[in-house]
Image (cartoon, rainbow, N blue to C red; front, side, top):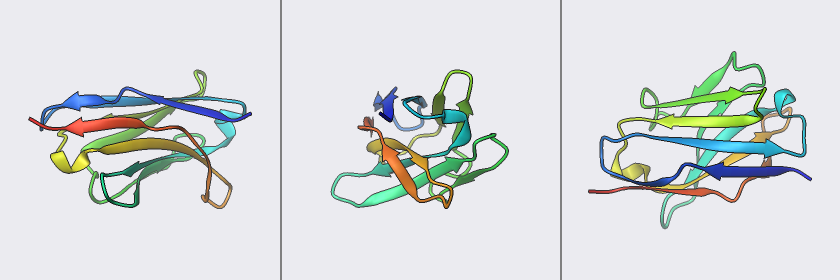
Length: 118
């Protein structure tokens, strides 16, 4: 079955960096676009970024553009999110998801907590 396992979250000071990883299994990772989505405390889901199967196309929410970088390693079946210049408002649970051909969300991971605080 499809499994998506996020890791790399933690507590970081404002201005710091983290790299999230999402290990994928149970499907042909290299054929799927992938996405990162987050949920801040007390708020709804917010789409963060997506990347197509071949890494030739990426998109970012305005709130993270210029600070976050999505990437993938199809040989390792792993999706990444490099987060720099972190702000307290980036505090959230971050989820990875695979995307269907119409870019609707498919399967989700369990999430990893990112807390940005001094």
